[in-house]
Length: 160
Image (cartoon, rainbow, N blue to C red; front, side):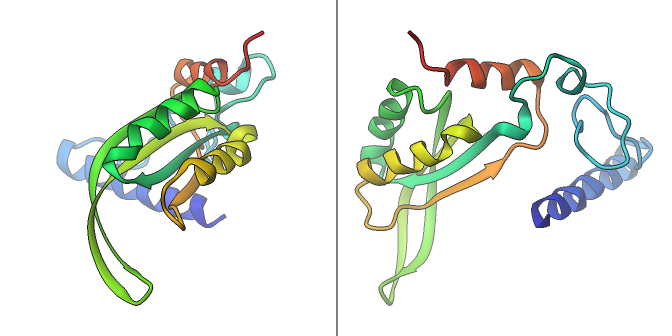
């Protein structure tokens, strides 16, 4: 519920900014981009197509890892077909660990998978990750480009 509130607040801010900067109305929504938001008539193929796992079953995971380990971790998850994609980008992480202030360079893996594979993906990350307490956060995808979401589903389906 909170994630929906945050998403709607962000969407409202973007629409208001578009209205201010571009002169576009600040209240319109594109059903193709926002198919699951309340109060919107949906014409998206995610709603009208055959019944199958849709964007509500796709998740994005955030995982941080040392740069020396991020590529190995991503490839391992891909080989197991637990994930469809992992974007790897360098980040600077500031945090406290065991009472000490830390300022580290890490890689952020932005991972796409099916909701039904999140538990197995988390287990694999915990097993293969070098950190004692790795950052692993799963977020639901509430909307997206239907062909991309279908691709995520297809790439994470076990092959015979």
